[in-house]
Image 1 (spheres, rainbow, N blue to C red):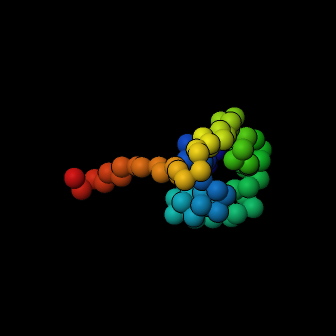
Image 2 (cartoon, rainbow, N blue to C red):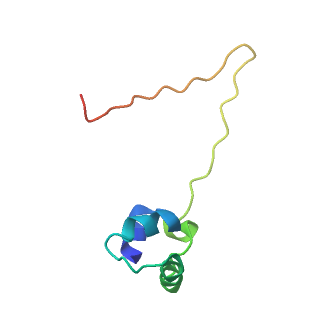
Image 3 (cartoon, rainbow, N blue to C red):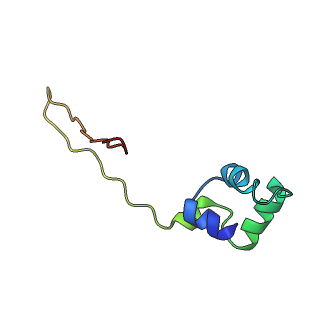
Length: 76
């Protein structure tokens, strides 16, 4: 359970729903207690340091910023 949480970084409820088919008697409180015991009950502790947010570049009046991204799917 702890390795699954560290690998996927899912929320508590998402971990519960993913693990219940393989561990049918798992309850939400038992999962939370287990994650607390191993120090992975909060995602902030697991994910490490957050990168610093940068401010947007300032443009002169009349210009605006556009982000362009390419999305690829398995169906190429």
